[in-house]
Image (tube, rainbow, N blue to C red; front, side, top):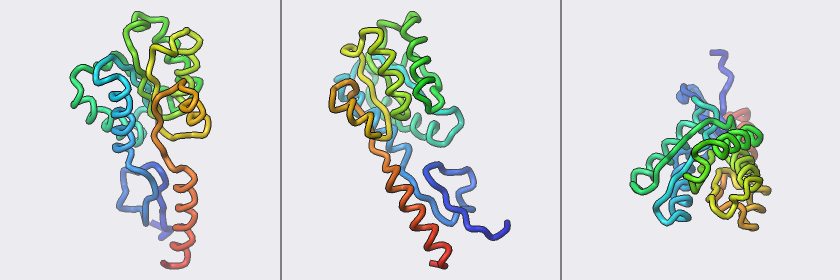
Length: 181
């Protein structure tokens, strides 16, 4: 209303039409790439649990929708549980510890995480339970730490989210907007 240009970065607001521009990735596609990688690692069949971001947050909704799109192609992959890990490593670890202490313990063979932080937390809990060789783990972001775990074989999937590129591009675009371009 004040005429101040708005630039969206990494999360699409409900009123996209008010933005001057948006910089970010396709979060539905991220969920699809993640779930396809998990499905491939499972050989098209198995049981999963899903650690989602904060409920109602646009990436949580769209990543979940992307996961759903792929699950429709794999009737032999069943989701046994889902919960929010609030995009947080510690919360992801606690949620996984709860699942490992429940009747789900030996029933799932993959955890699908909406980001790498929750995936790392889940991996730590799975590792502490001595089940790292029995559970496929995947996340989104391709953080340096997650890439190290991927290389070591502790996790199987991460999806590249270009945080530096998005941040740099948003600064570049902000300068262009200020200059009237």
